View 1: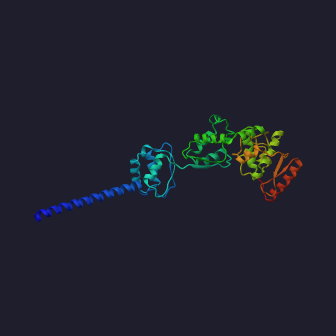
View 2: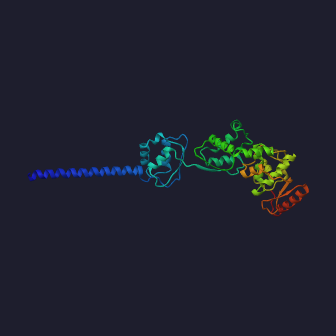
View 3: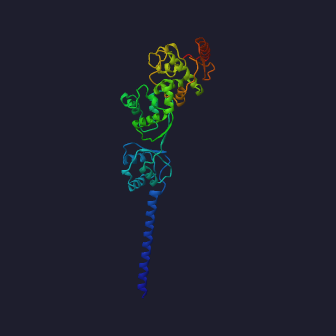
Length: 351
């Protein structure tokens, strides 16, 4: 073989090798680019959760992701989402984000609707608006939609309640539910929890003391408002049951405050007592038409298992400990009341 032919072969071989190297590099770069897009870290640390509203499509999700800078490379997220067919599988919910999460892992979570449950914990909300406002911070339903259902006699009648006693359906406890819960779904869940709470043993106690379940809740709300110390709840419940069963007006100060809708009142005065409201137990005999606040489980159970005694009067202790002085006679009560009133005057508490 001549030197000229050998030189041509060597050149061809070198070209082939160079082309092979270039091809290998291109494939490597492509593979690495693919890896970064799908498996490389992309989720930022700017948001803890991604909220996808009911009815959202992929473009809505993509807009949120870009505006809130949830990912560092939104184009890579979009390409991954389209490759994984996510645009046809958008599910609403509250999704936890973790900085450094890959596009593939994020899209996989969104595809299957792997959302984080909301841990809901009710407090003793006094007004419907308070409860609705709190719920609107926990689930997708807004406060207006919740209040509208609370005020809808037709809607809540299917659960056996009225607009006055509907608060009886909400048992303050800890619950888990998903963020994309509608107002209607929220009511349905709370009704299930209500039915679960009223066990056969509790229902038997209701029948034993001669009240309905909603009446128990109405009385429990008063007990809750009166008792700063749970240990006194059975005694206070027993006192009000004595008055109720004897046909004596309950004359519970918390109902006066509720009737006046002035929750800044610290000292109930005569002008407050004459407020004409079915919730004012100084004016009307018997229980109010519904709870004046969301009663706690402890208060409900205190009513169901109220303490048997002869007390029909009580007055806050003059040491402001939160405990009460109980009395059987009017004379005893007046003496207790005078001590407490002196203590109020000494502290210049006029209203």
